[in-house]
Image (cartoon, rainbow, N blue to C red; front, side, top):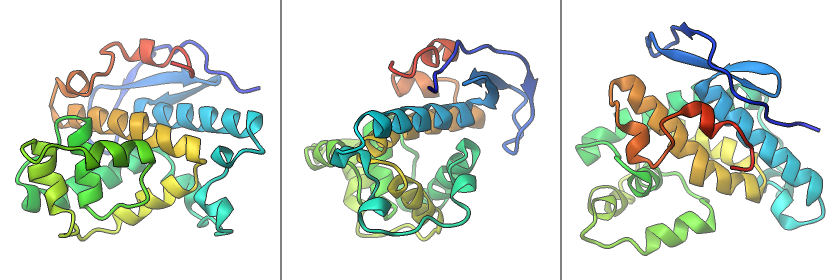
Length: 212
C-alpha cells in the first residue's frame, strides 16, 4: 500500500520559475519539488479513497461517470509544476480584469471561477455563493465571472480536476490548489504567501502525513 514517509529537505536547485530556493521532498520513497510533492500527496489520498470506497459515487471521477477518455498528456498536466504554470497563466491573463492577485483561499477560488473554470466541488460553491458583496473575493473576482479570462490554462486545470474522484476533486480545490498557488507567489517573492493561506510555514510538517 502506498504511504507517505517523513519528508526530508535535501538540497536547492533552479526550476523554470528561476528560483534559487527550490526544496526537494521525499514522498513514497521518491524525491520531488514541493509542487510535485503536493500533487503526489493528492494522488495517494485519491487512490486510497478509490481503493477503500470503490463502490461509492465519491470514488468515481467525472470522466468515469460520463465515459470520457483522459487525454494522452494527462500525466504531464497533473505534474505540480504544470498546474502552477497554468495558475500563472490564469493570473497573468486575469490581472488586467481584476487589477490585483488573490490573497486568500476565497479570493483564489473566486478568481479561478471568474476565469471560466466550472464544475467545482459543492464545498467551494457553497462558500462562493455565500460571499458578502462587500468582500474583495466577491467585488473584485466573483462579480467578474461573466467576463471570462481568455486562456487555455483554465481548460487544462478543469481536465485535471475531472480526472479525479469526487473526493479527490474536493481535496484538489480545498487544499492542493491553495498550496500550489501559495508556493507559486512565494517564488514570485511574496514571503507571506503560505501564511495568508493558513498553511504551516514548515513545509516538512505539512507533508508528514497524508491524512493531515
